[in-house]
Image (tube, rainbow, N blue to C red; front, side, top):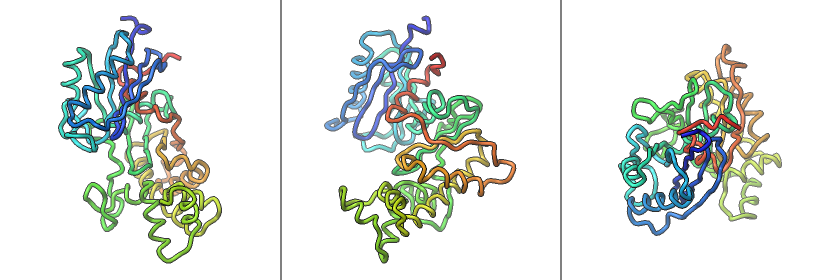
Length: 319
């Protein structure tokens, strides 16, 4: 089949919604659909919803494959989602097997952070890099690694879990059950938790900013207060940037990337974050590594998972 006549569907599966999009061989998004997962009682029902969306969004066009991004631990080689979402019965789900049997075409399944990394590498801020580390600072920390132009999966496709690298074994307990993971020091949740702890005996504009919205403190409120020179917020963000840079320095020493791409909600802080993060990371890396990489904000937005999942079948090099 000629490249210009081939189509791919990307699926971004979340805990509350499913998004599906049709792409042509140039990476142009031709159609997009979204559906809530509420009401699904079994894993099979969720899969049937995805299959229905694939058929609907493709509108009869010939597909060369379906790329699927799923949260949680994913065995990409066998296309099995092991665990990690609040979807019903979502443990050891053989997505590849079930969906290929229904659709009659190849299905590839990856972790959502790996899909986002690949999307940024192919069409976003990582385009043109040889070796790229992608990190998303959000509720937790997700990551994906591209080495020599290939997505790093590892022997069992669990590679790239940088958020669970241990920064301080005497640190707080992580959601994974271990102590001192990078995630508990440098995620958006860590920013919020640190701010709440600091405000137990200190007044802060963070409280006022949170009250003016929904009343719950978020990392966004902390950055807003920092912009207003609130002492507590400045201290929280300084502490967080130190830990963010510590994890990034570890990644630089491990993977020697020429580009680090930062995504997730925390990255939206822009100039309140990036200049200080670049400076601190440079301070923490060994001298030979300084000047060998750039650290930039992610370029793609909400469709990054769809783009990355679809690009598992071709890299959309033509413009």
